[in-house]
Amino acid sequence: MIDDGHLHKGHEGAKTGKGHFTIHIVSPAFKNLSSIEQHRMIYNALGNFMQTDIHALRICLKSD
Image 1 (tube, rainbow, N blue to C red):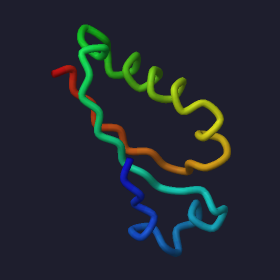
Image 2 (image 1 turned 90 degrees about the horizontal axis):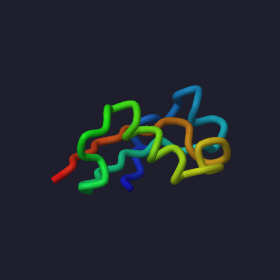
Image 3 (image 1 turned 90 degrees about the vertical axis):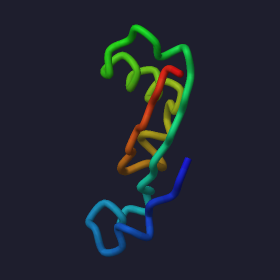
């Protein structure tokens, strides 16, 4: 996970203390899944962090 917070200083979402992040994941688990299904997997894995710590998340996924 890459912290992109420095790119968003002064942004309204940054004022809450929640972060801006980018993740890059390569996993065969994403094969044959739609983008929405892949993103749901990530959101489920992050759980409460999406509510408490993350304001914005850029997701870059590959199946191989």
